Length: 190
Image (cartoon, rainbow, N blue to C red):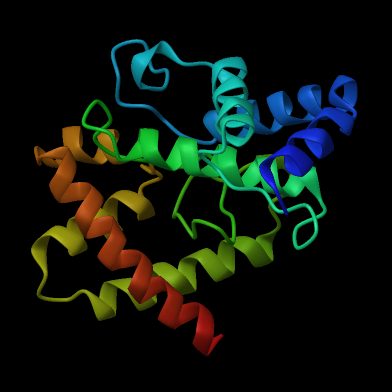
């Protein structure tokens, strides 16, 4: 497909509905992260509107190649471009560590419970079993043992763990990555 054909397809999209959907998605994506910048916003002061504009501009300019024939769902494609931009911001030098506000299949991040009112006694039993499993699995690794204890005490944010444990943010972030791998083993067993 030629650039002019892609350009024509882009111009035929229903931007009056697509653009607001993309802004909502970008706000959701940004809101799931706890930014380690002074104002707790993405680096560079970008907001959802800026990120969506960057995504659209990248596709229009040809920096991001969209093939409507093989990928006809424009909304899904633009969401992937937004994901890429946000992931780049997460890895930027202005941003040290990432913590999601909800647990998802995309990130498998150990995080705060979303919607406490939905928690049942069964959920507490599962969490207790997971903590017990993690304690056994990390025995001997002092940092991981301390992080599991933080989780058991209800401390979920990396920066709060780092403060409580008097550790560097990067140490906590890397240890949580290792802990997620162990937690995945638990999930696969159960």
